[in-house]
Amino acid sequence: MPTQMTENDDIRVKIIYNGEVQITYITAGISVDTLREEMRTICGFDMRPESQFTMKWVDDEGDPCRIASQQELDEALRLYELEKDTEITIHVFPNVPPAPGMPCQGEDRSIYRRGARRWRKLYRVNGHIFQAKRFNRRAFCAYCQDRIWGLGRQGFKCIQCKLLVHKKCHKVVRKPCLSLQQQQQQQQLQSAESQTIDRNGDQQLDSFPCVTATHLEDEITESPIMEEHPRDRMGSEEGEELPLDTLNDGDNSNDMQRQYSLNDFELIKVIGRGSYAKVLMVELKRTKRIYAMKVIKKALVTDDEDIDWVQTEKHVFETASNHPFLVGLHSCFQTPSRLFFVIEFVRGGDLMFHMQRQRRLPEDHARFYVAEISLALNFLHEKGIIYRDLKLDNVLLDHEGHVKLTDYGMCKEGIREGDNTGTFCGTPNYIAPEILRGEEYSFSVDWWALGVLLYEMLAGRSPFDITGASENPDQNTEDFLFQVILEKTIRIPRSLSVKAASVLKGFLCKDPAERLGCAKRPAGFHDIANHPFFKVIDWYMLEHKQVTPPYKPRLDSDRDLANFPPEFTDEPVHLTPDDPRVIEKIDQSEFDGFEYVNPLLMSLEDCV
Image (cartoon, rainbow, N blue to C red; front, side, top):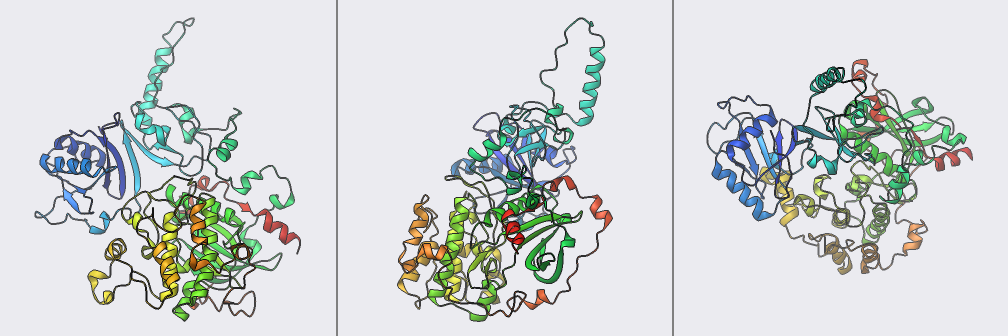
């Protein structure tokens, strides 16, 4: 069975096979035969020695290297120690190459790019196969007995025996994994043995059962046991804000009791579409107010990571409702097949739409937009949120010409000073070098993306455009783009002012420790605000929207869609009928508590 990590010198191994990631731990002196046997068990291969499969580890340059001998395994472990890596990544294929140096069947070089694809991640310890899970109900760790609580995927659950543990405890679990059938057999055996015990005798409970009811999330029922101020702990220790609907659970006002449904809105036009959702312009029938409605099919939200980003987007929308340069949330509701976000309708169009018309912007226009975006990003950072998806498409202009950031699906919550994360995500042209290098990162990635955005506004092109790349297939790939981001010296157009060139060099510094805005808060934002490029900005006036925007979108009415691409607005407005067979497969409990009404917007509506 896969080795359990019990000592600090054990090596973490990430095994990728058939669309899943499994994590296990090996000792430094492991033999290649032992490793192969573990791979057979982990991947479910035929246990016969003659059955063939291929193991390939990924070196520090992202290249696959086969492990077929003890010498090749020792070399992989030697380089692991030399590079001081956090783990070794091994890809497994259920066949062998047709010839040395040839790829295996089903092998594609794109799978070796760190984090470029989303995998289902499993952790193997002492026979358990743990998966990160969200717990909507009360759950306790089988190792330390403490409650598992917090936002996101707070703990691990064994997909075989249903054991629940904290993420921090999963490596030290010593209880062997028993299948549910084995647990039932064990319970029946214990029950039979108990019948032979003297009625007046004391029977000692098994001190080490694999699972008890309190550790099974699927079998937990609500109990009257008092909790030890979990909300206070979540708010004070973690520094995170609870959703407004949670904070107002005890509010009996009509505003907070009001809920919305699809029947409350008239669907007017399609104004956007993405891989997961489409966005409609809608009218709230009661007030005749115009909103945008983001519609997500539940069938596309298929795993814990998808559910997490939906919950994260909702939390960030709630937080953003208090800022002038962030799109806020009106309400959330659901049907058996869909999730609905009702958000502010920002009708001036996005910067991508305007840049396609103007090609490049004057410095004073770009300075205004970047300054407002900086205030929005700083607000998110102060709330412990990394935005991670800044791009022209996500910067909207309101009817007066002020900026509004939107689309919070890539956000990372709960980042405190000194915390880092490591997920590979973002839009390729805006991804920071530290993400591409596979390093842990924090708020620095947003300031890099802001530098790319500012360069595009001033130069009318990306800082990573390569002359003639469109005609050269080898240079027209994501891999080549990432190489350019990592290695190319960014050239600043000579037409730009000295101050503009200076601020671009500051934001586009490849070392996050030296990047503009990345000093420890609050010094980081002060460095931006005090940069000579922003000397003419009155930041107090700007934050209070008392600075006149350089451009005001031309709009005939609050329903004018002239600033939205016709490929969206020409689409028919309708939602496809529900398919009962699809709805049957959806776990509706995953979306418990999704409904929400913004109390501030509700009170404004009541004044109409």
